[in-house]
Image (cartoon, rainbow, N blue to C red; front, side, top):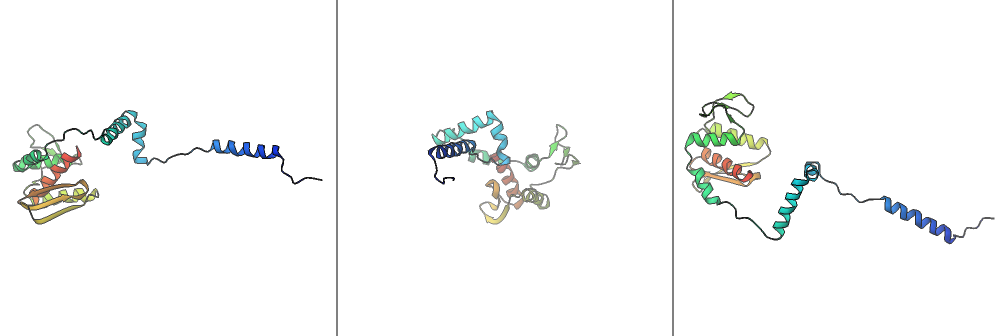
Length: 177
């Protein structure tokens, strides 16, 4: 006849088996694929962690003078402004004089008149909206027109919509780099 009684040895064996199972299970955290590079690059991870530590300790460097830098965008002459905007959008000069340019696809093309031609300036808006960055152009605004690159928190003002768009691009480039 078999006994249904549980012996202390059986309880000890069951507890040992459960403990072994507990040790075999490890907790894990999922890392998003677009962040995995950081965890693989120890130098970059170290710099990020150092920056987070500095931020927690409220140790910040003195930032640039945004108002002073913004003034330079307001004084750029037309074709210089066009060239700077084109560079931000991926255009490349093919010669030192800056007269010949390649578009973002690498094809030779004339430099667009972004700061004076509304159709050219609209290409900028299409460039950012294709990258899922909302753009808002409005009037009236301080100085006439305003352009806001929403995802980049960049704003530009100007007497024309074209100037406002160009200045927003340069401000965004300044914020990104």
